[in-house]
Length: 416
Image (cartoon, rainbow, N blue to C red; front, side):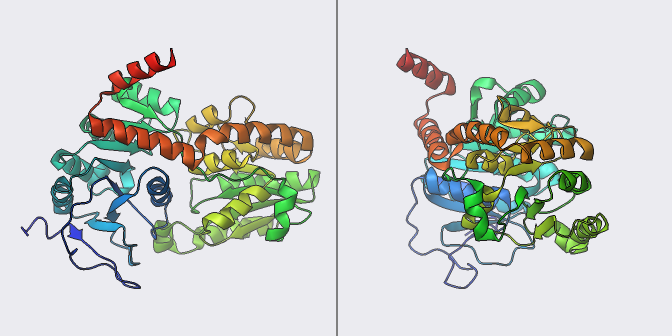
């Protein structure tokens, strides 16, 4: 093995231990390779990729391995790319070129790839000789010159690009000059949860008699939770049973920098406002089953994000899939997803507006019920079996070499 390929480690993972040795046998794996972060890494893209492999097509994982990761990976992780080692990217591409793969599914968000603005992804795709389907998790309206160059070149080097909303597809065309016919819109996948009355789920979480406002995800600044905490005194005055619950561990990057200082500031502020019984933090990473219970127990879901550029939100997608009425700031994804009466929009950074809408929703069961039914119906297109089937069709198309324009034309003929 040459010096380059020594850096992109093919690994096997023994029970209870981190993979560290060469694979035996050398039999090529025909199918799909997924290049992404991956569990046990605790991030949204890792979870997304795990679900994608489950519902679209099983395959091998080439994991983007950050320097702080220490836990062992599962056996499907066959290749490890050290995020900040540039030679690993070309070596990984060279290894995958030998696999006889049908396609490579690549997840893109600037921070999971090495190099300035994640530029090492370009080394990888330029060296790859297999069809590439790139799923874009972040598309900025006002990118820096480096961010613009990386994303534009990545899409041009890919066989197809996937975005999760029509707004994202339009943004790619307008800001990054991407040919719209090369872009597929496939929703963010969500669990296929049954439609249940929140009051039936609350006893499982010790929330009997409470009206629950929920948010979840890795905790960190930029989520806008401060505005919700500031809004809660007025909400509680209107509805003494109201409780704001934030589910999720602190973001690992923030934890490494300052520990739990940010969470402690939020807890302290809630205490200052007399909200000890009305603001609850569940400080852990919850699994799929428990997260489903929290979503089903919620009367209202909230994404108070101040960043209006956000082009996708997995958490809001999950809420829609569960049929939970949502209150949100009008970032790009929320504008599209909550149209048609599927939720309520509030201005960013406005505790007064948040308080008004939360109190209105919590006090009007009929309104909540009408919104949750519309949300749940919309969410059926986002459940993982449907999303996985869409990806599977896309993988089959790029593997067969059928251009996007031809596939679209065939689809129009078939539906005529």
